[in-house]
Image 1 (cartoon, one colour):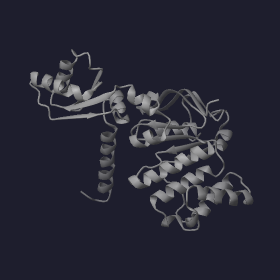
Image 2 (image 1 turned 90 degrees about the horizontal axis):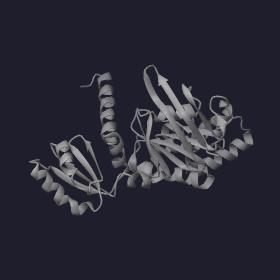
Image 3 (image 1 turned 120 degrees about the horizontal axis):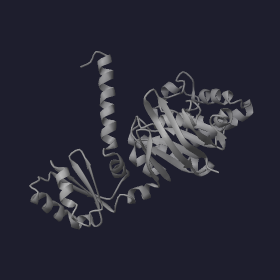
Image 4 (image 1 turned 90 degrees about the vertical axis):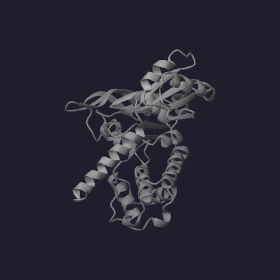
Length: 330
């Protein structure tokens, strides 16, 4: 039995199809990633599975329970770490965990044992009685993960678990996620827009954009699906260069994004001179050439035609400017 199964799962807000007919199966005990930019539908998808958002159409089962028909048992079988912080900074770490356990009806003895266990798991025993307002961002995130584990869930949802954390703290969180999965066999579903996070943690990944699943597989399978090597050429005329390269049998796939053309091929280093000569013949200036093995970033570009980083950077700048404007900044 799969830990999660969805069939044509859909969520509509007015004219917006935030989640558009998703069929997905997640195996028990795996770490499964939903990779995509903000607005792709990842959080909406998680909210439907966790019963916090009503399904428009389609169906979903979590831990064998139908989300629409048996929401109470779904909630008992899952833990959630939301994208936005959901801890009380005026309480201690221990008090936050105790409050959560009481909500699930755990008795005093079981609460004490479980609190000690999850604090040890996330290495926060020495901070158990400190107020949350004294915790760092990474410590708060670790406590939220501990809280999501208090009632022994079979499935743990992590919505952008390392968003806003520095690279070093992000790595610490990754190790805790792997440890939880390894030691307890908990199925973990995480949403992320960090390519390296999906690559490092997930046994399988689905690339999601505009409410749809565009591709699924292991990170290795997704990378190999777009070719052995990637040569990226920056030129003012990428479409013209694409047309000029189509005559070569060694060109497997091409994709244009902004002023770049990405060329999937084998033995890329031996083909670069020919690519440059083709550009020169077409009177195109080659501004830069890069050769690398395919990454999940390349996979995302291949299926969407844009970079996920550019998408996120743009939205971050818009949010920052909005905050500055709200304070009267310029």
